[in-house]
Amino acid sequence: MTAINKEAVKQFLLSLQDHICQQLEMADGKAVFVEDAWNREPGERLGGGGRSRVMKQGGVIEQGGVNFSHVTGKQMPASATAHRPELAGRHFEAMGVSLVIHPTNPYVPTSHANVRFFIAEKEGEDPIWWFGGGFDLTPFYPFEEDCQFWHQQAKDLCAPFGEQVYAEHKKWCDDYFYLPHREETRGIGGLFFDDLNQWDFATCFDYIKAVGEGYIKAYVPIINKRKDTPFAEKERQFQLYRRGRYVEFNLVFDRGTLFGLQTGGRTESILMSMPPLARWEYGYEPEANSAEAKLQEYLVPREW
Image (cartoon, rainbow, N blue to C red; front, side):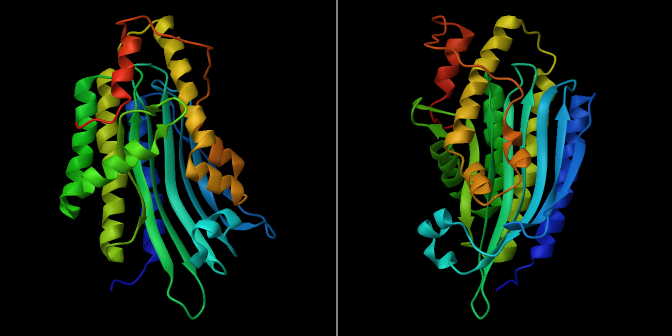
């Protein structure tokens, strides 16, 4: 069995944050990420710290954040141990990179990615550990070729780890990023997984590396292809309306948001995923056969 190497995971996550920020800055061409490094004060429920990096009012990116965090705790929240009683009485560490990019142009999709590692330890007992993460795409005006490209990148990175991995993690993504009160998915999906420890540590770690690096390989070409597409106020208003769905999911259903808030995490970093502008409209119905109406065809799981 491969030894668990927490420090190697941390160093990879820090380098991944650097790489993703560099690539997004090149694609944006105007703005840069501003870093807000933070550390927990003694006596708080959580220890540790992180690097929150935010870009605002770029050439492409209206607002985006790429966060690294490494937090420690003496005990899990009750909400977690209720579902995982084996974690009771253990101290834990959670580290990861999480990002959300909200472009200005409605023809450039919003994207999200996350890779994380969790370990709970207790003296005299084996550690409990797992990886989680994935990435997903939320277009407002979808292009079939972009959606196919996104999923092909996901399928290719999964291939070395088993022929069923893509299908399983794609379905997990479709099921997870679903708004039951709207009866639609948040976007066109991608990959999602949690509790990943069925392989040895080294293989699980390799998969996390592939997912983290695969995100930027999939997203930047779509940015470059669509960032100069002309748009008018109608498209902008539809984008803001659809961003409301993003807010609904993140505040009501997202487990990462809930875990962060319940464990006393850093609020600004947790809510970094919110778009800078969004709107809601009562009883909105898109015009029949319009580009706005066509989006609904993409908010149902399908094979790409």
